[in-house]
Structures are given as C-alpha cells and as structure tokens.
Length: 179
Image (cartoon, rainbow, N blue to C red; front, side):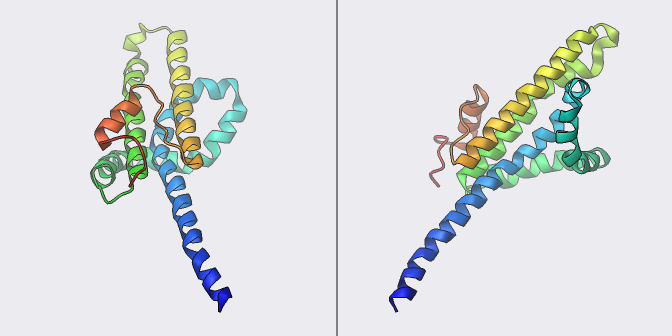
C-alpha cells in the first residue's frame, strides 16, 4: 500500500515536469517565423561559409519551399498568432511573451528589407548591401538563439533592448511567467 501512495505522490511531479518541458519547447516554436524570414539575408554568409549553408538550409529547406509557394500562409499565421495566442489570457504567459517577441523580431526585419530589396536603381553599393544583409542575419540569428536558449533553460528572454520592453508592454504586467 505504501508503494502505491509513494508512486501516486510522484506522478504529479512527473506531469509538472512534462508540462514545463512542453511549455519551454513550445515557447521556442514561434521563432521559426523570423528564422525563415532571416535566411535570405544569410546569402553572403553562406557564400563565405558553405558549411553554414548545409547546417541551416538543409533542415529548413522544406519550410522555406512551403512559405515561398504559399506566401500568404506566413501572413495569416502572423495574424492568427497575434489574435489567437498573444491576446488570449488562457494561453500561458510564457508562450504569449515568446510569440509576441518573435513577431517583434520579424517586424524589425522590415527596415533592412527596404534597404536591400530595392537597391535604389543601383545607387546602393554592393558592399553596403552585403554589410546590411550580413548584420541582419547575424543579429536576428543571435536574438533567436538567445531567446530559445533562455526558454529552454526556463529563463525569460527579456533582455533584448527595445524589443523586450515593447513585448512586456503588449503582454501586460511584468515579463514573468507567473500564470
């Protein structure tokens, strides 16, 4: 009888660990969208370091092909995440915070896209385009890496200047995972 009591008392702990692990991994999932969007900025990096091309592009290629074929899917996913997750208080704050932060990172990529996509009729030198693309790639990859590692460790990825403050303001209250 004692054995049954002991095993039943440990069961909720195992369940809590499983739920916590799922939350941590699930909080990394929204960062797939800025990851897909930043990969084109890595073209100069991939030319210089083909091993990174193999490491990053090979596993991501099916998702990239899908988003290129169905470009509106990304837009609808963006809107759906905002409406269905960020504003839904029934979703854990950890998940809502990370969805909003991934969206903010994605929004910041609009500025380098404006600079690099038009090239202003050849007025922007190739070296400048290379610099902007490379900086954008490394910067966004660093933000995604920091956020995912923080989540997996159970920490709040709230130390990104400007972005984390805006996310905390959108989510409401502190950036803690207190719900």
